[in-house]
Length: 499
Image 1: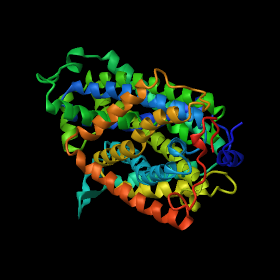
Image 2: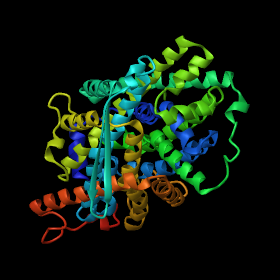
Image 3: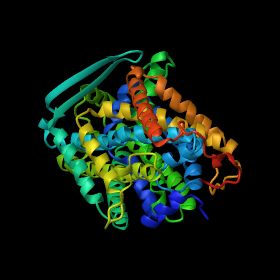
Image 4: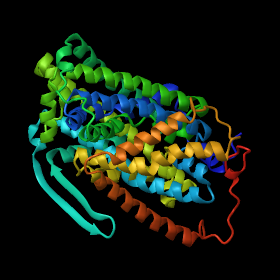
């Protein structure tokens, strides 16, 4: 029996209606989204040729390594909140874990809307295939702020015709999610059918028109292991990491998953393996039809990123290009839908625990879902639709790696040491190798990129602001580290019970 009172309370209010099929579907539509359909030119540009496939391959390897971390933690702590719950338990729910888990939720208030907005902006970019005028800028502004020690913080926002479409997409996803969770399972499967159908059409078309000489036409210095090669590889891996992320979506819905100890690990690993195969085949298919130099030109101009539309036009003509564009937009919307659903449960779990603003713990009286959390994330995502896709992706990945994935990868090792007796329905394969590989990959992506300090400054600023907010709340509530006498931290005991 689970001894966690928070989880018990939430289990009485949330419905366990998500099985393995729905969980895998939610993960996959979160993973695929618009990412691979629009970021391919960006990855080609990062490495200067089809050798950018290395970014996809290494991205898959690190996704599996990180997925094993999520699988072990998700099975051990199968409640709503995902990383919030894991970080709290790993680092001590009555001590440092309270601060670390708060900082996770704090950064999620920025990174989750960034992720949702990236899907909406990507969808709007594909709409520009039908209406090219959407790509024309209506207004653009840059803001700079010099801060002691941090240097100059730069923020740039833009208003395009496509910005209005992106905002409407977030609003539509919000309307569809404003209902019972049992009504969402069939919606996720319907959206997944469109996602898989689109990818399979691209793959079959590419394989039946495969030009190996074109797909593997590497530039002369493609594999010259120079400093620039590794800079390009890190940039490509950053984008690939963004494209693979989402395999953990079901972890944020733990209280709504049937048999979570078995369903969560299976959904995680199954979705990663399926999507990795689809990504590899799809990218080879496109490179075999569309010359990579043409993709490079599109990335450098930041226009015409609707590569699948161009791909289908070359093979079948305008009718296929138009159909493919609609299907990709369908796929992008599926991603926005899934992201908004999963992330809305995280601030709810933290607020229920008393470690975030109380309003986020409110449950809709009729539909029984955290409606305040859902509305807040959707509102922030609409604001972030005013940023470019490249800026959204870079800021999202750096913030999340720094304040979530690295802490969690280190934490799974810490937890094994501190609580060896904790019941683990799933144990990481080849422990601790996957965690060590994930840590190495994340540090490489963070540090070995051109202009890497730009997003790192954002992260440091978010941490400083989060620390200030946490300390003020803790001081007012007489919580750690301002308690006169610390409550015992039950996570120090090896009995395996959660607190």
